[in-house]
Image 1 (cartoon, one colour):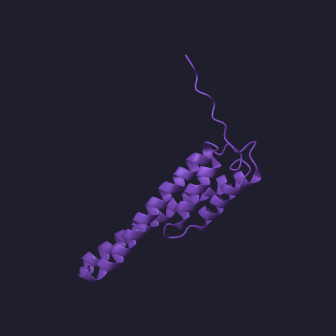
Image 2 (cartoon, helix red, strand yellow):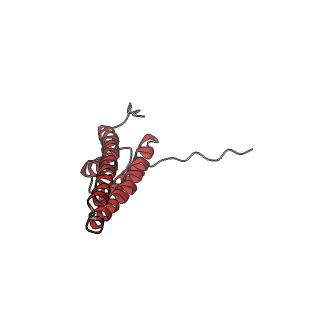
Image 3 (tube, one colour):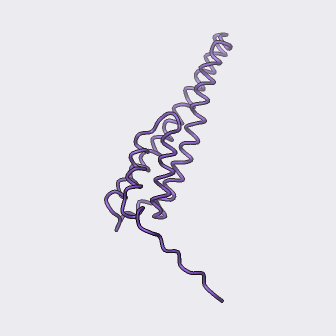
Length: 130
């Protein structure tokens, strides 16, 4: 997964930072899910169901946005694994702006975008003729 031999230092750093950000995003998703469960159960047990619904909806909205950001981060990690660092950097930057902000993903995306591999033209092999 971290096949980083022969890459520039910017590409290596970007790939590692994207991986770290995806792992931290998954941990944040688990934490937000746990908090949403606690808020829901507190509202049901104490009888403050209506009063606890607004914080619960806020947490669920954050959880949904974080899931979308993590999906974009996984796409960035996929393209970084395929050595397409310009596309990986774009996905990482898109992923970082979804709330809650993810600065590690932003820095990893910037490193991917400024790497030597992202700025070289990718040659597409000609199709094989029968």
